[in-house]
Image (cartoon, rainbow, N blue to C red):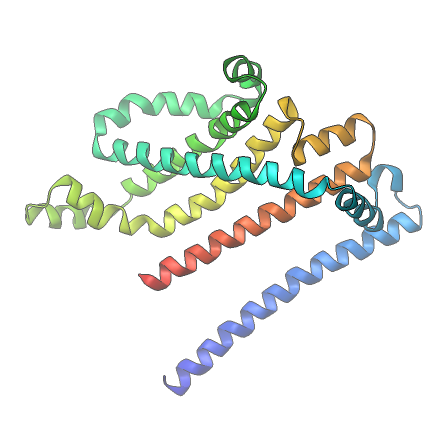
Length: 262
């Protein structure tokens, strides 16, 4: 590598380190200010809790062997719904690209379903699937899969039509065009959609756990609100934020590997 290229790479690393430092600083300052406000009684620690109380609550959950059980239940449900939703979304979006008539037929239904408040479907889902994990996963799918379909299909449509015509002049079939042009050109787009799909899956799972679950982070938050234990509610929210952040960064790692490979 040339000297200029080495300097350029160092500049990128310094910039990434700077951004990470600012991100960590924001979190640290927020925690410090939150604790100071609670200690000085500027905010009511009973309603707003405090970092110390949150840590104590998480330690209590750990000591009573409740913490990891609830984390695992929610993580399991999220992974199942995320995986199924991603596969269904990509498959249906592919069929829509492959068949314009199919896309025109289902497009209005996708728009209508996407505009529906999904929580309103909760009672119907419970009647269909029962008060169990199936209802929770189905709720998450209703929320995440339609967004995945719409965004993936939009990415497929935006591939340069001149490139498609070029392959058609070489007698390429529609399947060959899809596998060799449409799909490879949308790897980064699909990864970006996965980031959104993760958040949608978490939202759907927590909504489902609010309705029917007796385990999981959503259940902890709901139970805490019912007994007016705001320390438990905020602890559950923070645990949920950490889980979603970890999954988000795992997708980022996947994105880097795919970009480097291509």
